[in-house]
Length: 483
Image (cartoon, rainbow, N blue to C red):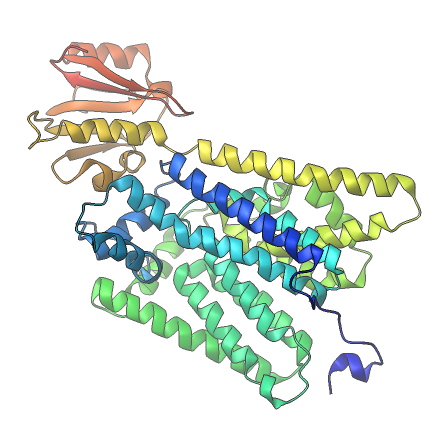
């Protein structure tokens, strides 16, 4: 018998009418944000950290034969299974696929997964004690949060793992009326295993999943089935992808733990906690605090805390790693909003409305700011270099680049360009040895000092092109050429 019935309470309400006004609003937000992500993915055609270029290049390797060698710690399940089939469809027509289209297609699975998560969160809301209105608010707050909105327009895969987590929660957050539900933890564990294959560190999502599963059925079998499903799916997806990529199952997993163990931390362990205003947002912190007196806040708060704490243990930290915590944050915000909007105090009601409006404004601003930080100017310079590569009438020879990945690597510049990669620093501090044998040098304008320009001129370089539409302008120099 379900626990709610045993305790004399009515089962948690659920959204019965998929076309209720709340559902229609949610669908409208899904379509609007999906359209924005697709447009942004096409317009902001640069790269953010190089991890996104790895994904795009990996997919192009399997579908288009790009001679790209993956980093040894990367499981290629995401580019191999989720992106390369889409590129194969484009190749059927026999026409060459340009790099910008390849990068845009690589963002499609993430854009679609992040959009589906909006609907999943709406449907999950009542299981966390939210009304239909509160569920729609939680879905909207998630859709317009800076992390899922911004990264939803990129190839970064963690939003796919988040969608898989929410789907797994839909499976286990039910009232087990009969034995037909006993294997739901197994299926949910399989989904988390796939999320682990998408990105190894997303294995931390297993903790909130098992916590939620135990809420419904407090039995050892729940843990056993969840762990068994996770292990089975992870073994098939990781082992299979590695067998295709490295000719050795689980090779990338072994490398992941080897390299992770040797990596120095880039931030202290408490960095996520002290920077919560930056990744969660001020409105989120206030509304979450407002939700804490409600009993329903315990599960989403524990789930979000588990994810944040787990990622705090990792040596390398980035705000985008916390994607899995944002749905629970949105639920907490909706719980806080519903508590304040129904309170007798007028100031709380007005504060709730103001915070509800402020959160999406902050999120959209953060998303656009994130995308504008991509390397569009460097990619434009990479295209310029490719047009002058050997075989097109002008021999570029060896190229010096500041952060090769920012220019798109071989995806954008092709195989004919030999690259000498320069780590970014300010000022660059160029030397004659850096420029030895180099025909073209492309660097960030902000890192170029007068002394660097003097070295370039002394070595026979002249400024030939400049690209400065966005935040990271690039200057291109050619040896012995006039502008």
